[in-house]
Length: 304
Length: 326
Image (tube, rainbow over all chains, first blue to last red; front, top):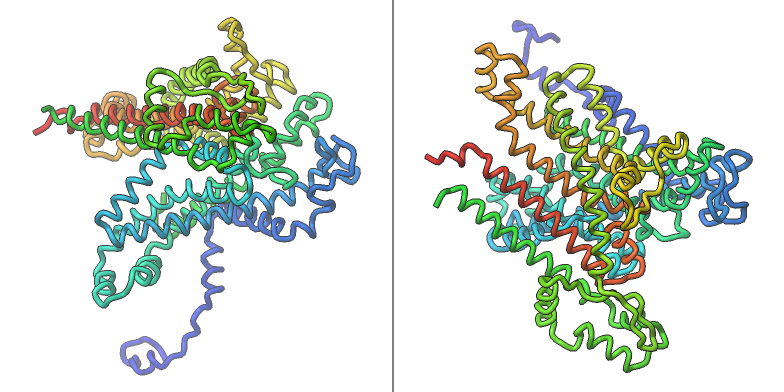
């Protein structure tokens, strides 16, 4: 059968069986077209996730196992040596991936739930609900978030649930801003109006009418938000008010091993030790940004 | 009234309102403290009377609104309250006024911040304009790559890399920036070199990229095309046609980054053990010394709001469309 005019028949074309590409095939085709930076980002993120998930299987020693000598050098059973109270740094790096990323991920999800929920409610209701929530968010955003987080931590103490709640609250203001802005464009569409007219509730309109249409910017924002949350938690832990010992965490590991940097002249490995957790933080941030950039370019159709 | 004046006044009123709400939030933080915090401050063995006296001193026997106005009134007169630390369960009170704690440290922080700003702002603007002028060149790409890298790094990583390179491997600068009141000026500058360099690297990256983007954005507009078509050199196009219209976004960028400096300074001060407000605030958070935390938060938030306000006003005042109303 051909498409030539004399032999063409509409019936044949409709009857023709065409294998649809599966979701996986379509994803693979997209991935093959991804630029090297995006690939780099995805590989790095996968490695981090793998390490985080299988932390307890991969780590040679326990998270808080301090049965070794303090400040042992690299090698000799301890890949990156030991820290000031004799904990294996390599093992703590692995557990740190799980703890830091797990907490950052939970925080980001919570921030999206709270910020996104309020934003959609504000965008759909408009009027005074929108005004009240938006002005409240304006005031919260007027305080630098690290300073606000420090203040709240001094009140509620530095437990992990408090840390997650506080940072999620602060970051949900940013999520609110973006979600409200993009949702505002969708809320005025006819199909939303139709859904409201046929009597759907707030929850239905939020989930079934608006959310699917604003997904791409939200997914990109999720990536960026995650890296911001991750950096904030690392900074707070570095300041000593975030994740508390003995829980392994990259931010506090930088702080704990910082004094080793003085010995860089005698042993460069010792000098580099505090930079390993800090570098791990930076690498993840870069990787997430690469992937988000590519994703944004794909979904918005922008080419530079 | 002139439209600019109206807009500026509106913006000022909005800024004042924001400051008011922020002060309410910071004030009410003490309300959320668990009920037994007086015991925690004074120690387990504190007697009923000591606790009662302490609660009276904090005014906890009065309604919150009265206390807020007392607090804000005292604040206006430069009284930030009394620190929680230094109180004993026996009722002996060696606590110090918060002003005495914050005052000298605020000077140090301002010194570090202004030293950074003096270097960073001209550097970032020059680099941004040059990168826009020679965009696509090797210089542009190099500056872009370097700034992207520094943006992705947390402040403490930049700080420790600088310490490793410039203090540990090649001992040029001191790795700790411990200064006292009677450290001579140039000695101060020398000791602040590394913290200031860290902050510069972090904010120059942002500022330079945004300056470049602001100018390149403008280069797409028709009047620039016109200026080019009439045969002006690229340098002249950028300096006399693009730049005057880019002041508003650039002022925004500069103020935004100076405001960012306020936050970045906390981490950098801790890395270099610099006696500034950021370090004080972190210490106060660890010991849960709420009056000091409140004072520091108020200083940081106030600076942040005022800087953003100034940026907004500059962009209103330099907006040509508002300058010549029809």
